[in-house]
Image (cartoon, rainbow, N blue to C red):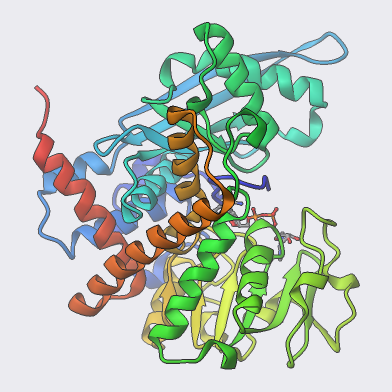
Length: 445
Ligand code: NAD
C-alpha cells in the first residue's frame, strides 16, 4: 500500500442492478464480504432513514455523476503492446471538486470505483472539506510491470483522463498499488499537455514538487487523535489504556507510536505474518513499520506471539484494525473482547459485524472519521499548491489536529443527540451536509 494515499480496501465487484435493493435485505441473509458498492448504498439508505431528506436527493446520491472508462495501451519492455482498462468514477461534486485515490490492482472494476467514490464523498463531507468523492484506477497487477512500464501506463492513463481531471475538477491521489512517484508522473503528464506546471492536479506527490509535509503520516495520526478523544469520552485515562493494532504499515505504525507517546499501553501489533504481544506494553518505535522493513514485526523480541485472529479477540481497551477490510465479521464479532474499536483500515467491519458489536454495546468509531487525516492533509496539499506556499510540518500537524477535533465534535454531537452508533452519527453528519448543499443549489436546469 502506498504511503500517503487516500486509499480504500479492495472488495469484490457486484452486479449494479442486484445491489439496488440491498438496503432492504435481512441482516442474517447478507453475504459476507460485501462489495464496496453494496456497502456504500446500504450505508446511504441507512443514514437517509435517520434524516428528513428529500428522497429525490437520496436517489441522486445512490448513483455516480459519471464513470469514465478508458482504454490504456502500453508498450511492454519487450516491444509488445498490452491493453488495460482504466476508470474514474465521479460520485458527487456538490461541495467542490471530486477527490479520491487511483489504484493499480487486478480487481479494479467500475462498480468498485463507484462504491469507493461514494465513500470519499462522505469522508470529505464528514471532515467538512470542500471536495466531493471519486475513485479510479487501472485493472492491472502492478507487480507484473517494470518501473518503465508503470511510468508509460501512468502517462497514457493521464492522457486518457486528462479532460476529466484538474485542480478545480477532480484531484486524484495515491491508493493501492500507486505511490508518490505515480502521482509525480501523472502531474508531469498533465502539466506537459496543459503547457504549464499544475501541481494541484494530484495530491500525495513527493514534497519536492508540491507534496505536503506530514501527508504520509496523516491517516495514522488522525486514527490516534480520534482514538485519544474516544478514550477520553469513555472516561478512561490514556495511561491506563491498553491498545491492540492489526497492521503495522503507514496507518497502524503511525497510530501505534503516537498513542504510545501519549501514554497508552500498546500491547499487541501485527503484520501479515502474525502479532507480537507484551502485556506490559511494546516499544513501538523499536518495531519496524512496513515501509522501514516490510513484514518484520515478528522479528521483534516479545514475550508472546499471536495470530492475527487472536489479536482481534484480545481483551484490550481499544482495538484498531489497520491492515485491510472485512476482518471483523459475523463469525468473529461475538468474540471481540475490546471495549472499543477504532477503524484504521477502510471497511474493516462488515455490516453484520457492525450490528453484532452495536448489540453488544461495543462502540465502533468509523473509518470515514478516524482515518480521514489522509484526505485532510491532501486538502492542505492542494491549498499549498494553489497558493504556491508550503506549510511547515508543525502547521500541518496543528491544522490536522483542529480539523479532526471539529469533525469529532460534530459526530459526537449527533451520536449523543440522536442516540445512534458512531458510524450512523458520522454518516448523518456527512449526508446532511451533502443533502443541504444539493438543496441550496437545486437541480439544474
Ligand atoms: P501498508 O501497506 O503501509 O501496511 C499494511 C500493513 O498491514 C502491513 O503491516 C501488512 O503486513 C499488514 N497486513 C497485510 N495483510 C494483512 C493480513 N492479512 N493480516 C494482518 N496484517 C496484514 O498499508 P496502509 O497504508 O497502512 O493501509 C492500511 C489500511 O488503511 C488499508 O485498509 C488502507 O486502505 C487504509 N488507509 C490507508 C491510508 C493511507 O493513506 N495509507 C488512508 C486511509 C486508509
